[in-house]
Length: 181
Image 1 (tube, rainbow, N blue to C red):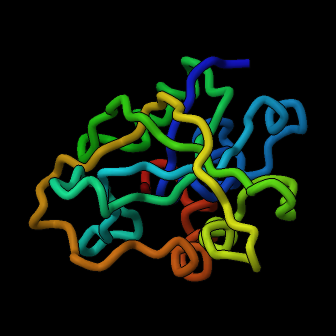
Image 2 (cartoon, rainbow, N blue to C red):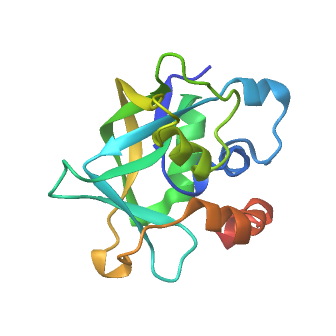
């Protein structure tokens, strides 16, 4: 098992896309899948934007770090080889930075869904009060993430939407040749 932790906030939140990049297949062998663990998380002080003319987002640090945060997942268990492949996938539009991310956990007594986080709706629902049971921020985790550096003029003001990506584009991305990315 690898010891790298990555905060994903875009296309790589879809487990089949992450596995496609690091294992070469959206449906990895059970032993490969078992090496990776997903944890919902929140990155404070950043904002996620749609990239103009692209299917993927970019995040940038915001000066008003108190009121901005990006919802995503921490991915545990990545190897040096996985990180190498992820660096290639992200390309020159991003720089890998070390950030402090807060895990999300169910409050005491709240119901907890098992398994991988497969939708941003599932993540957002975790943040919505369910009676008196809400999701709390948990421990702070140091992780790597990819921050947009290809120019703010290429970023739209609207936030990138994971559900729209999954519905309209994920199948293409999972099946595309690497040269098409």
